[in-house]
Image 1 (cartoon, rainbow, N blue to C red):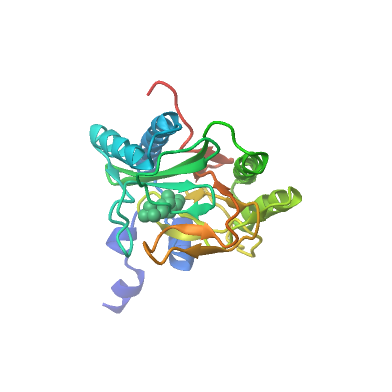
Image 2 (tube, rainbow, N blue to C red):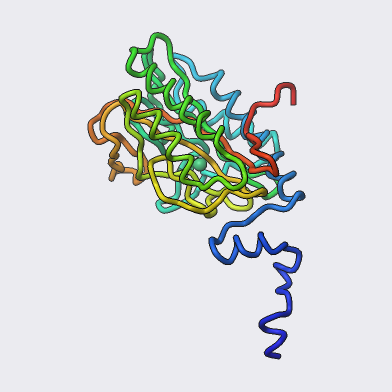
Length: 281
Ligand code: MF3
Ligand code: CO
């Protein structure tokens, strides 16, 4: 009995190689199998396609509630489930997040029409056949003031620069360094109260992926899937959660904020952006 208990492979982990076992035991990180990766890739492609549709409908006069309704339809048509709906406590009431102007993240769709000069982040998280994808983009409505244009541009560049460093052997802290180095060089601040996350088998898995300077030494390894979703502010980095809904996070100083997000896979030689838009499918 004793021998069995300590050396007999656990049924659920008997197919895991030693690196995967180590990551699971030491960090609670699930390194994905090729079969799981295929499922996550499919979910991510759908997520990217839904996000793209929603972004192309986001125009002056359209309400974010209408975007949420379209999101429901698109999920239903694809046989997918919106991961946000009913998530957390209090249960998130809609299928997407729509974060306008000074909203850092988790803005709830409502009946306010989009206005000329708005910037809006649309964040889509989708479950397909049990696998999760997560991505977001900014949409600029009409003529947008230079300050808002800058924060949209810099947050996208932060995402690209941080993706570029991702490969096996590189510590997770390199992501935050790439982002904070660039954002601060442009005179902007990096939100440190919300982070990216492992994703794929569940909505939010370990590890946490910080976008600010940090000392996370965990090396990226093949089979990790996680989001990078830098939130960049024009003014101070800190935010306040709206006590009325328990979700909407606004910048403390009311200045604009922007965010872009992809789901990433670490491959043997580098990375794959799973939520890149694949045209035509
Ligand atoms: N896509 C967001 C994230 O990165 C979703 C937040 S949870 C929600 O985790 F319920 F607010 F949608
Ligand atoms: Co996310």
